Length: 445
Image (cartoon, rainbow, N blue to C red; front, side):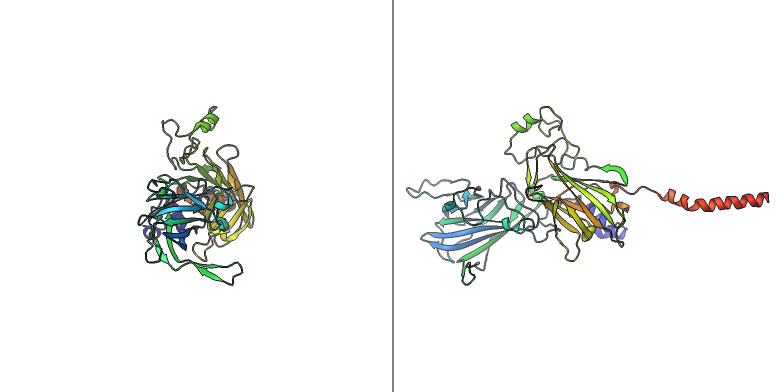
């Protein structure tokens, strides 16, 4: 299909914009092709009826993170294993442990589900990289907090490499659906280095599980949309109608921003629900990203980006944007946002990750007067490619918190006013004047 459109003369920019309107069900992100969450299970010590292991989650995704209320990791035991004790995490349910008379296990379920402990947990219950309330930041934005770990003491399991059986059917929730996990694969044992670097130890046994994200699996409808405007055109291109859903007559589907009962509705609504409570708009998206082409200088041009939260139920902590535009190779200055070039295609620098400055605008507040963050970007003009024609100055695609936002159709972009008639008239006017004068002289000479 893309090849056919190219042969018909459709530009690559329009193809990219068109493709961003179509969600993909595949767990593959072209802007982060190697992104995944890897679960590493290291057996460190044998016990009389099992082993002690440290389980770690590594978020290798460049910009997709897990925010509060945090991750949930589940699996199905291969035999009749139990969890005697845990540090740095806990099972959400104990299960039926009635056959144990004195020493009661932490969890007896065949399919346990584990969550992180909260900040402030007593030190004797912590291990390294634990106790962040399930928050797992992205690798590019905050690599130091892109790892989570917990320790588990497993009983009624094997006590050698040949008798231990790896768990099956791993699941990862964030906290809702979205991630699909593969089978556990036994790999080379992890090696650990002492603090002075002079001694190396290794796990008795290690297996890995890889989990990948799909926006279609996470939710049926998109979660963000993009609107556009420019200084050279009075048209403001709003988010496409019903980008994230449509208003209906069902009570509670959205809240009017000017309603006198707004505060009571927000306070009485189920705050623990993961379903957004959004302001009534034509697009019905929790998040809107607005790209405004602001100023044209002799050698530079400036863009203003505004992110608005229409969700009354959620503050977005550690939010981020990923924007694709060919001019990011000539980015000169960015104000009040952090910036990192992603380079998903190697030498082509057209993809930027933007996020807030810590303690300044890294928290996007709930819908209302303070529910927005904004920044301006200054680009240097490249004489070989720069133009304001045919929507070139607008982004090819935008992600918010790893989800692809709905873009307006390319034919709706603010284009330059059609000045060809005025230009042609200004060019021909002197010749018309001269021709008229010569004609007059020839007639009346």
